[in-house]
Amino acid sequence: PASRLASTFSTGLLLIAMTACTGSEVASGEQGGSGPITQEQIQETGPVSSAYSLVQRLRPNWLRKRGRSSINAPGSIIVYIEGSRQGSPKSLRRVEVANVKSIAYLGSDQATLRYGSGHDHGVIEVELKG
Image (tube, rainbow, N blue to C red; front, side, top):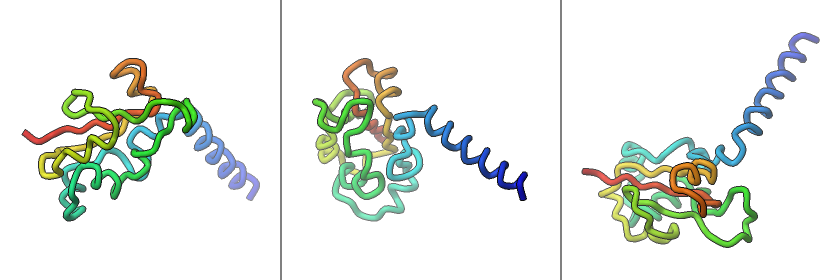
């Protein structure tokens, strides 16, 4: 009994430590779901009007500001399609779901590493078919 309690306590501490170490990067693909939105998930979703609607249905937290800055900080989540900066998440409304291969979210740290400063609220990356 005492050793089982100690083991359970140790497991809990390990989970807390792992979460603390990943910081805002837990948001990297984990908000509102697990990992990127894949082609299989897109097909299973059924009809949606745009990539924005798809993200709103499957990973709604990706559309909300987060990161080291407060929710009231200037800036927004930035969308990149095929590596090209498009603007705010509203730009996903112009993307037809039929053309989407995958959609991923990068937290502020990963977004800054990949795209440079100014990505305090993260990035949504869209990969198109073809």
